[in-house]
Image 1: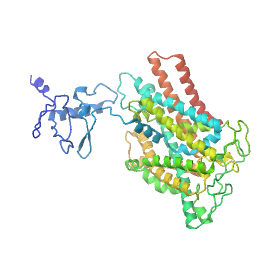
Image 2: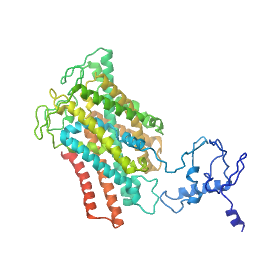
Image 3: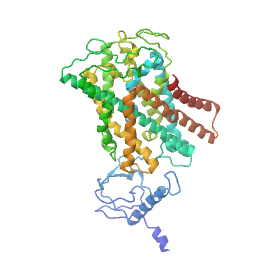
Length: 548
């Protein structure tokens, strides 16, 4: 009887607070059951938490550590969880701030969600869009951008809905690797991890190549300005808005971006050229700056500068618009035959653009967390539309405005900023801003690599300085080697995009959807054919990078 009487006691006792009384069992007055009663910010006095509630809280936390988050066996029942309107956000300093609005599924405005996805997807691929259109041909390039945008949008939609098809399991905090583990076991978990790391490390390599490029051109601009050196390029146009062809290609059907990377830029002096080289010295100078930043235990400081990515894209759009207005359009349609200054509208190198676009539209490994909102399909579709329009705008305008003649369209570089001389002030501002922005984003990418890899291998995001240092040496060494021997961001992007896209964009979302339909007895042949076609398309996209 005493035990039953003890169990019948309320978890939250009625405690007097000034002239304020409350019955803690009233569902409208429930509070979180274990909060230090100090520095609670609010308009009304708050009740203290009873010892029974504190004990229950400790038991719930203890049970939570005994089972996986997906195991419903020891999940606390609803009646001991605070009501949504009584939830607080607690800081480590002991201060509690009430969540206003009272809806546990509070939603960000759609415009915020759309631009958040846009900002996440907008990366270095935007610099390679004109080159990708050149590789595919102007008309075919536009078609491929639209089709790849639609295909990756659908596959992203399948990722977003993958957690909803899992019955009897709480998937509210799952990400796509958890879904892969549910359907395919350890193979699904590790395959999603490996391909996700490929995308992250590929992005870090591209960043290292671009930072070497931007640092070289920034230093060159400052040196020429201080020493009053006028740059002169062997291949370029005249006038105030000069466009150059740094690596002229003699084979119009080849991959021009891989040729003549060791041709020296404008000579500014033997000593300066020896110690300030884009491929021989600059990639090694960056080690001094970036390797220490990668070893920080937390990357929260660098996360404060993510807004610089939006500013960089906006400035690039302004720069592209200004250059297009100044240069005008230079187009001449040759559907299948090349000419001296123009390329065919349809080229056999189009898989190179599809590989770049797979990475450019890639957000599939984190979209479930980013879009836990209402109106998911609408917001995701509008975000992809905005991303696709941005890529089309930059790619089409730079390709169309490239002055042909006197230069051939084949001179468009994987980084279109390389087609402008280092003395261009507006391009100098773009390079300097991008250099600073990438310097802050690079440690964030390294942190994500460390969290994913170390968390799976050791169960700790920072198992020790030696472990983290060795990982960072491998990642940085890969970037230095690529910047030294193969500084082609277009090809690096297309290979990494096609590899990670094979699994995370095309194969795994399609297989998971078909398996879930089959388990429910709802798989029909049109769906099986279409999703099998997506799997084959991902395979063809990967093989096309090596054979086209």
